[in-house]
Length: 285
Image (cartoon, rainbow, N blue to C red; front, side, top):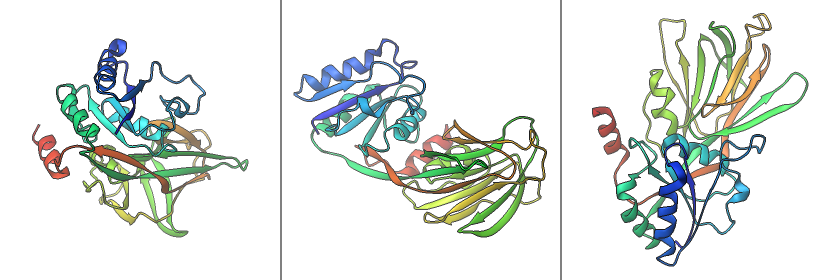
């Protein structure tokens, strides 16, 4: 690879010192490299990176930060479909492969085309409003639906491919990808899934039943979650969050439809460390 772009989490890379050091390392070896100098402005339609800043001929985006930074980059740059490589600036995560001390060796491998690319599935969610408008967004990890105001349980009606599945009375619902199985889904008691699998998970958050079970569905399923209209208007409002970012409000009687996105997140890998090995390390910490 010859053409790079760097996204750096400025809270973990003050003054962009690491970003500049990596840029020098690459340019001294004859590669092209630009870096993002500031976060996107509010209202730009992205969480952190405006995709217009990334040149069309970019072959790899280097993400300096943690898993959260890489996830936001994946959402912002989904249309680009360019591979992302995470360099961790803190505790090693599931998505970021190396820390700063291992960055040079990893970059050498990338420049020498010694890498492979994983394609991680993403979700797209579309909220249908009563006025006919639509609110759309995408997620790499999960779409979470919870109460917006008072900490009360929510009554959900869940449909799969138009067929009624079940009623849920819970604090919320998590619709997760395999990549997101190690995130909120895991905290809520959901299963761990190999990240390259093609499935979706529905996991209730603190359900008011004696049974707490995750539903596993094929990646091609269409999930519809409807907020029960039996609640009063204010206490019944819910918030749909996409990878932790607020996506839109659902009023009682409104619904969100969740499908597999046509976009994938391309994660570049330079080592053969397996998901199971990473999992063993994380669980033993």
